[in-house]
Length: 506
Image (cartoon, rainbow, N blue to C red; front, side, top):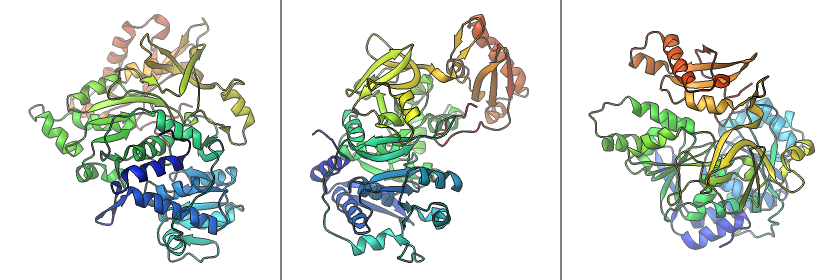
């Protein structure tokens, strides 16, 4: 079936997987379950609520961590013809208020953990007319603030139907970025639905997955939630990264979507396990016993980790995307993959290169940046090609590779171009180097390194700087003169990162 809207996905899944479990989540000490038929009916009730409050067709923000109420609220918003504005709950309050104002939101759905932020919205966001708690909230006054469960109970309309234009904005997502002001990416129903349809994933209905990534991010929302719903998966919601390992054992997923930082964290935990313990036992204890596939995206992943996890019976399949592409551009899958690549472009993505920069055109490419015409013109050319800012290449078999980031290029006085990511990825393969940032210092190349102090202690490395110098000396031997690291410094704390866990470069 062709998906033109998110409602098409929900309708298809309810028709084909009606009595199957769509979601499992933890409430107190209990595991709750929701069927596919309930996802459809309850999200339609949210649409009815919005209509009754006069909010249908408006911009409506959601702040909160992953939860079933968050998901049905999002579906209810977009399937009512409104625009959902997912916001990062970890942002400071003043940044949230700024995004609420910039997005022209008139209502706010919020998790009870964000109650203090929500209560101050009235004084900071004059356009907000309704705030709605995703859970029961006794303090809701019914004039300005409400709680969603009560509203749904009062407004159970038994279904909701409205005409949805696939090419109008349905979701406004703010990029986190590593530099500069966040931009509001305008995504239509067709953008998101076609991305779900074009992304090839070979899993059977009923396959158990566990969702652990931030739900306000396009990778989680589109690939972890909407794609999984289209496949009839049983999606288990991880309530907290603090409970990650416990929930792996509780839900026993077969599939997960992760970012490289989480994969690297797991690697560091497994790396120093005793060699005499069978890897099968380690995998069962660490991953719940059923994990077979990890889809990785969001940043560069060291290909060596693919081989490492394969020893534990787990396939890592790397992909590539960006919010501006809804988000998946290319992916490896179970029947077509190549380690070291980011997979083949989706069937709805055309690819070309302009001075090595990857450019994308297709049905998943954004409408533009909200109220930012200059930035939109810089990203989208007159022919509709999105300039990703990433440098890359296609091999003879059609697999895509990232070679660097255009705006990060170091251009030396002699005209030589250096991609700092190339050097960082090579240095980062060493276990002593936890994080590294390469930059220009005058006409020299400098590396700033956050060492893995635990690794150093476990391997009796007393002089970390001396060992890092040895690593850099060995690295330089294989590099042309202009790519050699001429100085480095160490740091005692991790680099500052954005909300998608990418290092802020400057």
